[in-house]
Length: 262
Image 1 (spheres, rainbow, N blue to C red):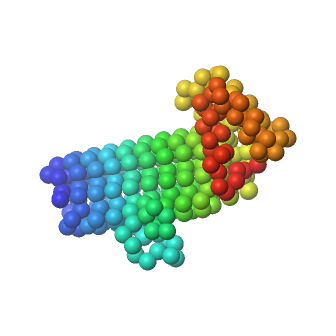
Image 2 (cartoon, rainbow, N blue to C red):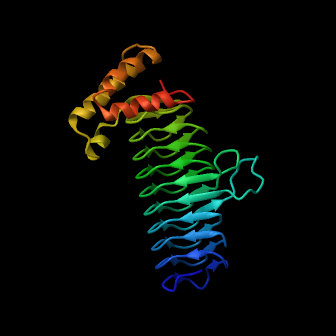
Image 3 (cartoon, rainbow, N blue to C red):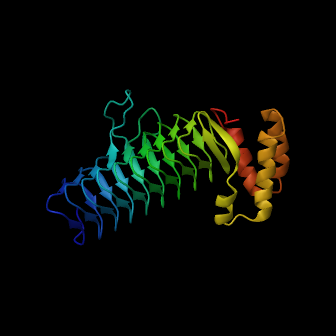
């Protein structure tokens, strides 16, 4: 069903069965498959391919040559009806690729809202991306990666499958990530190493000085104290008693499966 206010260019192909919301704009030479839902106000500029099952929320802008909802590149994938779900107000620039999930995981690739994906960024199968993240040019997520809210992934970064990137992480360009990165940390390199906390980012997002100081103390306990990981967790737990931000830091450490960058 196509809403009466949608604007579809004569050269675009929208298959029967696609759900196109109010005030959607679909530009020249776009292709939208039948099992796709596009929310109100979303715009496909030109030459965008959307396959499904895929659900795209409201007020997104998707630029030319983006490939959204394509079958994943996992050799185990046998054509199952997995899906991609994208939130609202994302900017998805040229040649970005986002793939559907696999039945070996939860069957869904999830992208939140208010994110910026710059040219050639890639979100692989079964990834879970939060809100207000920035992915610079050629940033690449392998399968099953989780990225927390407000994370910034620099250009040419590659993140290994099953890694978790915490909230408010700042990841420098060209980094190779093979283990988890705790919240608030600034990291860079091959292999990626920690270089302090993302102070400027935390200030911009309204963190109080006292919270930033508490996060810095937790970071020093983990990375500068010489303590073993279990010993550092014990000391960080004491800081977490009076700091919700540090509690989030500790929770991440406790839940990490791949281990954290050290």
